[in-house]
Length: 419
Image (tube, rainbow, N blue to C red; front, side, top):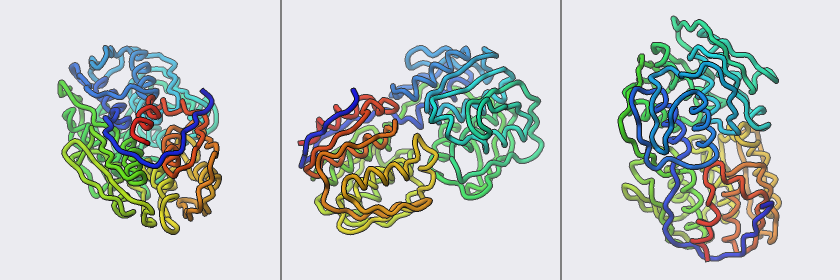
């Protein structure tokens, strides 16, 4: 399918059961693969990013049988492999780190966009402890070749924190395999809630990391031990689209699978909705939103919820006055340059948009009908701009199948709650 036409809509209400979180699913797959014992992952996301992780683990000799992962005990059985990891940063970065400590000869590659996403800070940190990693293309970017190195951690391991939190996550997950060590963050650590997810999940597998105000981390030695069975939460980033639909389209819209006890930072998208005038209620395993138009304008630092912040950018089209989304520079190294892409697409719809290095200022105007939204092979652009149809205008989404990265049946479920 090259495009999908969404008809004009005016109301949204209903219940949605969320797919499993991508961030949690891929972390758990790697932890389960590295652990002693067998882990059953219930609610595991079935989408492009988890499929490439599972395929890579199987190539490395790990037995993945449906939702059950038979741990390899910290050592991948296969010592030579050529791994294709698509555009899945949550697979590419942590596997780079784990394989660098595994004593094998591996090649890691992805789609062209993955080869444009920086990885130099992670590679530098790993080389600093003796890992042998070479660039097969441009310096600082995938594809990579990893060969056996002599790993020594006799000083703190340093990594920049202001490009991608996935670099720190990758090191945290791998260091127990090398006997543990101290990690120090250089510069500002962005997206701290994603590091909190990593620490919570490592703890479930028996490795408890202490940190000093997110500046340094003391990582103990492994091994990881399977908890037996673990539930994957619903995807809080995906929840943002349906909750935003409730804010625009009246609601109530309830998402199930994530709630007040979530370990995911994107559950705090509720704060965005409340600041914009919507009403949000939460239970242990659900969140519900109702709203009326126009919404209040927003001026907010969204560094802690970079994925859900894209939903806020589209919500700004329905606000009374200009909104400013701040500290979102990490958008530039995601599936596409999201700051540039969102600016282009929001302007197509009639908004005035000022783009800076790390912020957007969005002044809404009358929505233009029949706009074709380009999605840049980015699932979150496709999903967030579906909300435009609730402004009573038809909208075309080009390349809608890109949502297969994390939510293959998104548009079917979205259509089930709009009127």
